[in-house]
Image (cartoon, rainbow over all chains, first blue to last red; front, side, top):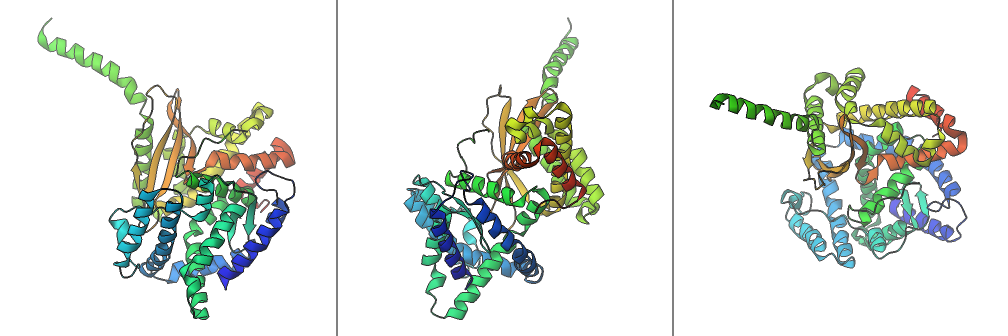
Amino acid sequence: MKMHTHAAIVAALLLSACASAPGRVDDPLEPMNRAMYAINKPIDDHVMRPIAQAYLDYVPALIRQGISNEFGNIDDFFSGINGLLQNKPEKAGDDFGRVLVNFWGLFGLVDIASDLGIPKGNEDFGQTFGYWGIPQGPYLFVPLWGPTTVRDGTGSLIRIWYGPVGYLPYVPLRNIIYGIGAVDLRANALGATSMIDEAALDPYTFVRRAYLQRREYMVYDGNPPPEKDD
Amino acid sequence: MNFPSFRFATALILAAVALPAFAQEAPDALVKRTSGEVLQVVRTDPKVAAGDKQRIREVIETMLLPNFDFDKMTALAMGRNWNKATPEQQKSLVEQFRTLLVRTYSGALSQYKDQSIDFKPMRADPAATEVVVRSEVVRPGQAAVQIDYGMTKTAAGWKAYDVIVGGVSLVTNYRDEFNEQIKSGGVDGLIKTLSDKNKGVSGKS
């Protein structure tokens, strides 16, 4: 349910993004994004955050780790594909190797590959598009999803569309897995989001700049060209 | 000249040459030593572990802050707006920005208990006055996070002026925030927003 709602919202936003209005170069849709941010805030504060916190407080670390690792296998697989799409065979080899090695770690619950020092590629479709020279396009803030852009959001849609969970024939199970995935993601981001509350003068701007910087850094595998001062 | 006094003279010369080297601790050595010392306190000090805010602030004030160049940090975050601010405004901006960062770090410090830090070899021109020290924070069961420090050489040794976490530069991030505040309320508006935030008055959110 969750991811499909995401998908629908992202799709709607992508369409509206095509009719772009003037404004900031990287955030021409700022008024709409701010409205989305305002809608998301109470939902996050009163629903997502408490659930994620309860998950951290009551689910044993070992189980949470296993769940993160299990989703990590899917990420590694797609990272491998994107490594190939970016002509980085070594990275792709590591990622596919991780999937194979971790299969022996209780079918992916234990991340043996990291213990063996096989690095995670952390590539995704958005980065591949960036590598191909496609610009970010307008920034988007999507409720229940968070910051993205037209380019990265398109990448996420492709990823969800082809993700293995979508192929599960039994819909309730599929939805439970999507739900757990969402809680896992939110729980892993709790530290960062509480830091933003402390640090930001305007959390909307803070999140936007942090997201765009982070993605730029990832597209360039940690060596982005220097930012121009203004 | 007899042998022992020759040795003594040599030692003196060596000491004279070595002393400035001690005073100017290399930037990577400085970051490594400081973060090691802070981690040690975070791990062993029972007051820090219990979340004693005053003690945490004390640790940050005495161990971390002396290694930061807040003037440069604030000027960079202000960008072209820095020169539009009067010296008094600049002074209060530095003061408020510093307080904000201490607050932010205080909240986050106890999260660093279980982490270890790897430092990467630094390739820098010995004559450089600005370098980046690269480190990687490893937390059990989580993806490693790159933390880089932009360092500048001052008369009082190397000081950090930017912290870049996973590619997100603190200075760049605040430049957008400062710009926005200045656009809507001028430099005084920014100072007010910062001081409200520091007093715990919830601002725009």
